[in-house]
Length: 399
Image (cartoon, rainbow, N blue to C red; front, top):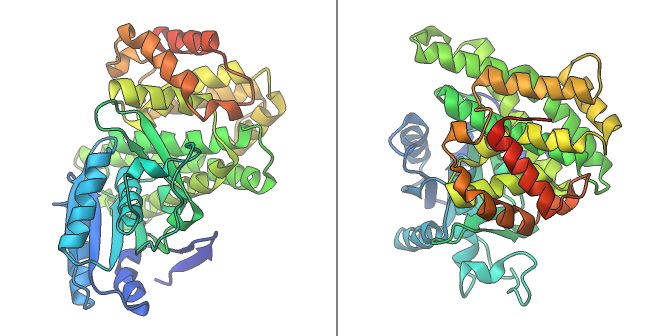
């Protein structure tokens, strides 16, 4: 098929089989020894084994670093830099979800920058400048969630405390992005749902964030429209395939739904440069304290935060309702949709259902209050507000 190409600002090539364009993109700029960065669960599967063959057939000698898992930590980055140097690599190909892509960005940063990774933390007093060479890296997402493939930041946690640190620079943008829906066809129902709710949360919180950015607003609404129409079908396809209906694996309908979710996710990655909100502050706390998957944490928390926000931005929540196609197009309609889609795709309704222990409440509140996302929330969130939000997320009282 003819691949679709669009730039925003990264050059993005989209379509089934887009992975096959990677060798040419590397050779175009004289790169021949990439380090493939991926997570350990994906490494033995077709997206990676196929990528190695495609690169080899294209005259490119790659080696695989599969030392990424869970919420990424600095030790994974350090190991990746060692692997880059051992391979005498000249470039990086990030293939995977947000964790693998974030680690790839951090590896690219630290190949030529001195000191410790967290010396470059965003807005840290006395932070080192990101001013040295950054190797070329390209991104190939295999989940429709974080949108990290088009992002200018990487989120890496401290090894022992799991506190998340953000490193930001426009220089961390991928040189090229290849969006291939074939790579997501085997994603099971659970990860499809959790990563999909991550994309939805990015789009919703970006639109409601109080900063001014009309371009991001437009992207957020269109991305949400795509997610609303395709997330449910993607999860349903995944369930049916898991139940044995293998003929659906590469059907046109499945490819189309997966492709549109990939586009919705990268649109979320663009839109949230406007800002995020309290849902993400709760999710960051949950990942830190309970090691909860970021998308799953967002999916559980978002209805509680939206119930908190609706009196502050009723017209904007009406816009979100219109984007997802519900009537009446008001805050109540959007809330109903949000709760319905969460139940439809199997996201737990409460933190307890996800295995989070209520004994961590004080620590969750403390970390959420300190998080950098909620200052952009459309309604100010105090410590007592966060306590109530977490309590409701434990009890299931959306309010």
